[in-house]
Image (cartoon, rainbow, N blue to C red):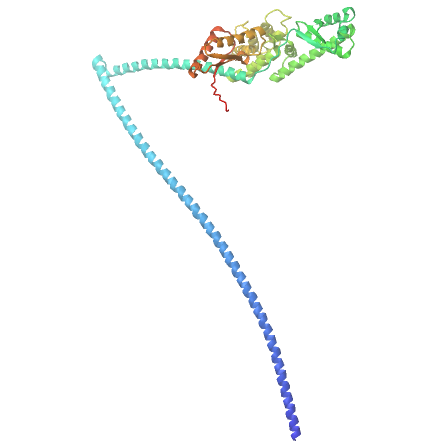
Amino acid sequence: MTAALVALVVVLAIVAVGAIVYGLRASQQNGLRTAKELEELRAQRVEIEAERRAVGLEAKAEALRVRTELEDELRERRSEIARQEQRILQREEQLDRQQQDLLQRSEAVGAELRAIEEDRAQVAALRDSVGLELQRVAELSRDQARQEILESLDRELVAEKADKIRHAVGEAKTEAEDRAREVLVTTIQRHAADQTGETSVSVVPLPNDEIKGRIIGREGRNIRALESALGVDLIIDDTPETVVLSGFDPVRREVARVTLTKLLSDGRIHPTRIEEVVTRSRLEVATKIAEEGEKALFELGLQGIHPELIKLVGTLRYRYSYGQNVLAHVKEVAYLSGMIAAEIGADEHLAKEAGMFHDIGKAVDHEVEGSHAIIGGEILKRLGRHPDVIDAVQCHHYDVEPSTVLAFIILSADAISASRPGARRETLASYIKRLEKLEEIANDFDGVERSFAIQAGREIRILVRPERITDDHAVVLARDVARRIESEMSYPGTIKVTVVRETRSVDYAK
């Protein structure tokens, strides 16, 4: 019994010990699980705290940004409000000033009105007193006195009106002269064409002097055939590699030049060949004449011109007057006439046409007797041109008395083209003589060191000694030289007198 009890106690003890061990192990495992959870919770809490801090920082940053933007916007609005307030203040000040000015003006106007009323009252009183005095002295009635005063005023006004009319007429004449000069100067400045001069001979270059014998031919038959067919003289002398064509008719000289050029390039020179080439050359020159006429008329915008008139215009390409090419001259006159007409309000197209055809008679004046102006007018009349154009052409050398505006335009344009420097050839001797005369007049004055005639004699430049001529004396010298030139010389246009007074100070560094 005792052993069993002991065994039971032992068993119970073992069981109790096992239970205790098991409980201890279970408690230990539960403790381990709780620690892990606590660690996880701590970790989560740390993360949550970090996120919270991050969110808090972001919120603070966003709040700071919003606050900054609001402050900037508020600052801009305050600035704009300040600017508007400033503008309003300025506007108010301006309105105040304007109101003050208006008040002052109103007061001034009121004062003027009061003064006017006072003057009116004085005039009325004076008029009444004058009327009474006239009535008393002249024993006139009031109506008679009024009539006398009105008649006196009418006489005074008529005299004043006449003076004003005379003054206006004088101003109008002066203005018209100034305007005319302005129109001519403007027109000349807008058109200035070069002119080329040509004599009554043409020169044909030869490849060598041996060809001269072939041109002359056996016993001179080739040169006789050329002169007979062409109507010009062939001058073959000692001038190296040159043949001179001499003839009065420039068209014939051009045909001769083309013919001789073709013969030289072909190499075959004999009477039969000469006749063939002369025929072809005449056709070629005639075609070229027509082309020149069409080109000139096209440049001026003239259309619907008769073919015969076109041919005559082209012929002017080979005509020269005082060394001035006639086609270039008529084109220049046409341009000038059109510009003058445009400036004064006349018909520009008719002016161009009259200027272009004013020397058309020179194309045939060597074949027809009479003035080229009259001949040209008859040609234009036969070809049905405008009557004003015909009249202007016939009047441009006063063969017929000019009576239209167009005629005077052509007269002016023709004179400008013919008389401007460089347009027509002068002899070298007369040209040099005029320049020498200019310099001689200038050098004759006391204090002049040197003088130079420049710009084709249109200007004289005078260098004076500065120690003898002062600036005031230079002005007087220019005037004196100009007056002496006017009295002693004849010249177209004007001559500019320029006095140059120069002082130089020179030293040397040693």
